[in-house]
Length: 93
Image (tube, rainbow, N blue to C red; front, side, top):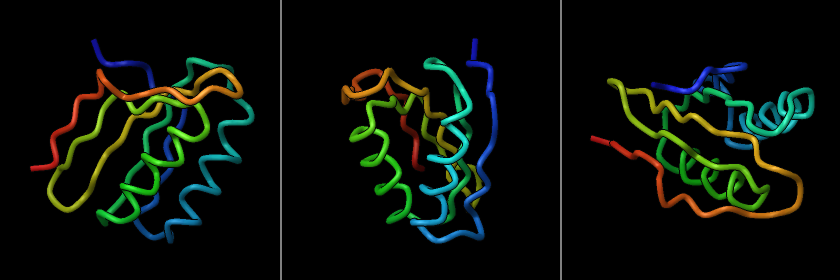
């Protein structure tokens, strides 16, 4: 069963910094375990969002592409610890 999404960040018209800033701002209002859906249109931004999530201790639980848009589901982690993404379901085809 897919996780329940708490909020969506539509980064399709945002720069990489803009998408990450929006995620940072939105995640503050939610407890650990909350899931954000992030929509992106380019590979470099996708890579940067993955790196940001890892640095901040969040976990990418799903990453797939629909047409020209990447959809990532990111679970908010506890403060202060980075997590690996061994169970992330990635499908970029």
